[in-house]
Amino acid sequence: MTWEIVGAIITLTVFRLVWILKRPVPKDITFYVLPGLSNLRKILRYDPDFSYVPYGLIWYALNVPIVRAVRYSGRLWIVVLALIDIAFLWYGSQVLGLVVFVAYVLIGTFQLFRAPWNVSINWLIVMAPISWIFLALAPIAKLPVGLPVQVWGYTERAIGHQHNYIYFGLLGTLWLIVFNYLYLLREIEDLIVVGLGIVWCFILGYAYIERRQRTNMSASKSTA
Image 1 (tube, helix red, strand yellow):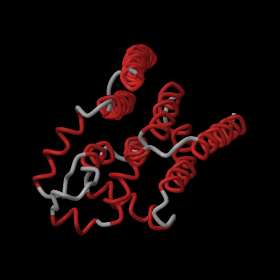
Image 2 (cartoon, helix red, strand yellow):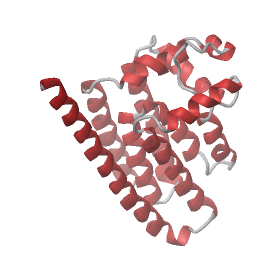
Image 3 (cartoon, one colour):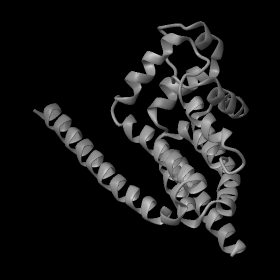
C-alpha cells in the first residue's frame, strides 16, 4: 500500500507541475499577491493605495520566505508550493481516512491551480491531527489578523468579488471535513464528504456556466 501511495503522489505532482508550467499564472498573483509579499512593511503601515491580499501575518510568514527564495516569480512560487505539498500529501495519507485524504487531494489541486494563495492555509488544516491549534490557526491566517484594522473592510469586499466565494467556501469545506473526522461523526464521514462533493459539483457547474455566459456576452458586445 505504501508504494501505491508514493506512486499516486508522484503522478499527481507531475500532473500538477505540467499544468502549472503550461497554464497562465493567475492575474491576482501579479497584481495583489506578489506586491504584498514583497513589501510587508507598507502593509503594516496601511497604505490605502497599495494593492495586496488581506490575509493574516501567519500567512505572510509562511509565504514570504518561499517568494524570496524564488526571487518573486509567481510561477516558481506555485511550483514550490506544489513541491512542498508532497510532504503534506504523504502526511495526510497516513493520518487521515481515505475519503478525507481524497477530499484534500481534490480541493488542494483545485486551489493550487485557481487560488494558490490558499495552499498554505490547506497545510494548517491538514496538520490538525497534531493539535487542534492548527485548526484555529487556519482562519487566523486567512483573515487579516495582525494587520491594520482598516484591512478588514477589504476582506469583506473580497469574499463577494467574482468567484472568491468558491475559494473561501472550499477552505471552509476542508476545515469542516477534517474537524468532523477528528472530533465528531467519523462513522458517517463518507456520507458527509460525498454529500459536500455533490453540492460543490453543482456550485462549480453553475459558476462555470455563469462565466461562459459572461464571456460570450462580452465577446458579442466587442463584435457588435
